[in-house]
Image 1 (cartoon, rainbow, N blue to C red):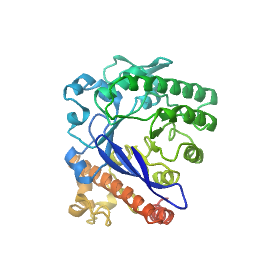
Image 2 (cartoon, helix red, strand yellow):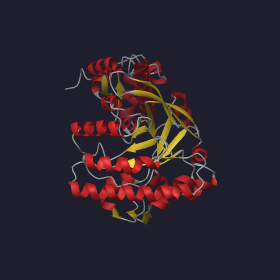
Image 3 (tube, helix red, strand yellow):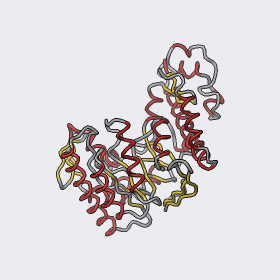
Image 4 (cartoon, rainbow, N blue to C red):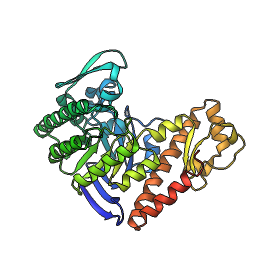
Length: 372
């Protein structure tokens, strides 16, 4: 399912090939987030034009609407969406973290009060794995408990133990059901406590053939602690395992994580930033809705060859956003995801050329030069 093609000689960065039921993905790669079965602002046709390698879909949200039974009637999530590249479905574990005022956690699972209609739903390991298998996701992730980065050791230990128990139960269910090439990726928790991370690795790596998710980071902890945990994971997870850092996506952070052996990312950053009028460029982020771009007739990024940069100016896109034309947001989403795709391609090429650290330094110097 995953094999390493090229390793950087001076860091832990590497190029790999990840194979799922819906094709091959060269890593490091960035998956777009399709929370409710769609990437906000773009059609599947445009995702294919950009060359997005895969999507992350939120099982909690599609469980609520339209419901698993509806998707099953179209045979698979891929058919339902009309998207035929790799799809990963998450576990609902992040909702344990983010919907703190709407849930109750026990050893049996999580009881949610739906943010949509207030209805109570219960996620157990069996419910979560069965739902993901029913809709034929390419990669399923077991239910886990994610806690704040500032949590006390005793709370992190409880959550880690619970995550391990849920993962083992989930794997039993996964093995009992027909999975037909679907992949099972456990998710590592343990906050910033290395002994808990070590226990999680020892218990969960044997449950997977070749991939592991990294959870419980970028949830309020200091960056130095985060990178320390990533370095520890890199040293302790088998080299031939794909490492998938869920929900992580600023360019500088991606570069650092790649240098520490991470292969796969997803994040709402490029689409969410676009919806606030912010574009990614090689010279940093620009808030294109602001007044300085009123008469700026240059493309968003002069080094970008996407459809948007070839055809529209900053001034025009600013105008669309400021008169609340949805087209302006759609154009920014398109550009941002294209820019991210190109960014990941440049990272891969730098690793192949044995100049990843030089690329990283040069990129960050340019990207951060206007950062105050």
